[in-house]
Image 1 (cartoon, rainbow, N blue to C red):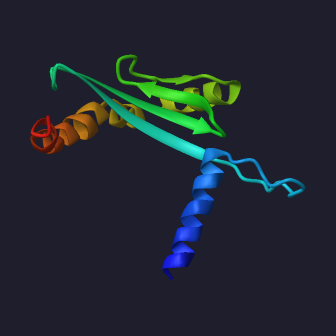
Image 2: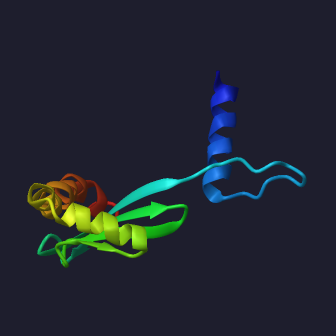
Length: 118
């Protein structure tokens, strides 16, 4: 079973990294959707910023930045999605609270391990 898992991992890595197909090989319909969450810490937890990026086939189409407080669309589709998400007050409140719920929580868990590794 180890060889099958390793072969699968290599295949996934090649697809994600965008390896070109072999000469004469037929292209398959592979699409990639990615959501990336980032926490930016300035002076510990005194100043934190939460950024969530929505990417489709290597193109960022929308993002949420806690400093801005709303979703921003970066493509025509992203603008449509951002308007929809921004129109839901409960969803926006949940997203704005991510700074404390996600960033501050993970900072407090990770600090003893990370600071001690200097």
